[in-house]
Length: 376
Image (cartoon, rainbow, N blue to C red; front, side):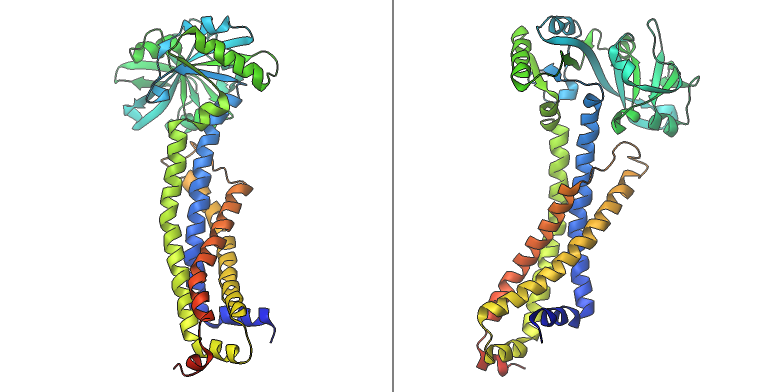
């Protein structure tokens, strides 16, 4: 009998136990793929907000505990525009509002000047864009409009008395923005008692700047005021507290499933070695070296791990897309499951398989043939 054939027969001998072990490890892999994919999608959606507008730098207030709670005077945008290498700037006020009448809470509200160049990057799906002089007007993202059952010409109410007309519905490249609303900057400032304030300032540089040019502009902006913090867009997103927290929570939650999968693999392989004590003793008696016994047990674990990796990856992808369609988050986040996430799942399955089989393999290799043959 060939070595590979023996490994295959050992794996399929107890089919129910094999299937349960693969299922347990598959759950761990699926948790990693799904949760990490969702976290990556959240970060990508946030990054798309800036990339869609071609923004090179984001300027916020230094020392803010929460960057989205950052506050600075909108006049700072004009000062930054005077820095050599800066092409244009735009203040951006971000708040969270609720629509009690519709039972929708925690809606991202974006405040922009009605003459801002940022508005040109949105695709108007119905109605019109904001215009200079607009009062009590609002644009709704496509996902938010669908959720509210609104279209251009409708009305929404803030704080039970502030009625705003829906002048248009927009579409963005960012899933997050599609679930938000855009108001004239001065109107959002009035609603939230933040007159003349913006959350951060978006900066676009001339041409295609290299790293040295970006670093120079960052230094000059920081030198304008010791309370300013300028960062390249990619760094701003990566270091955001929400992005880091989402990734950490994904791995922390997955670690529980990984621990359960590892224990399941260890139990299965230990039981398998115990049940085959006489068989391993015979193999040792006919000349098998301890290293070959170890290879056999590790290969059995490897077969189980690869089966779990394939099944878990498929389930994880389906689970991530199912989670993204739940009513509470529908349209807000699109899972970002690329080859790196799948590779992470495969590597984790392989590592768990090897770790779970390491002790049983050593135990099997240490069996003394004469004692193993007397085992009942």
